[in-house]
Length: 223
Image (tube, rainbow, N blue to C red; front, top):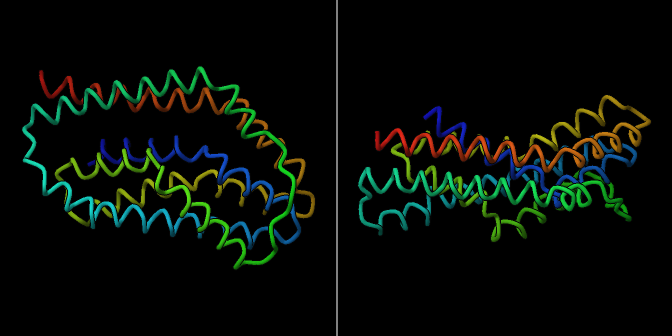
């Protein structure tokens, strides 16, 4: 359970460096009275991601898993090895594309979002609703959860771990905005620049660690 929680949380952390959520959050944070709207934005992201993950784990995901033949231990270990190879391949791709990721995260974005809690919640929920059909990291986390021999309460906890890891950068932005008070721009721009410059290396390192963990589980299974 602990190893699975680490893998799921790691996938969520990698997915959290998402310009579609980090970018709008930084823009919101530069406005006046932004903390409430940031909290609403983050709640909107979390709620839609949580509902989507639970539907996959407790709804159609379980049905699809039940329609498949029971996997043998050898097949599970092969899947772990394959997953490790895929994650390490993604780590290489993240490293190669680190400059493009930095540009996406540090690019200035024009325009302001409507003030208020409801617009913030709607924006966060809307972004996640659009992103869910192509949320490959979430699908990978769900596949790992469904492939493990854990009960429904543990599955719910694992989905929550993924979601909390995903919104972690948004929580950091809320904390920075609250701490900065009336002069948020400098601190937030510096934070966005710091994340952007190091995002590729961070994502690559985390993916390598997760991939190595899966490879280790697969190899240990055959030992």
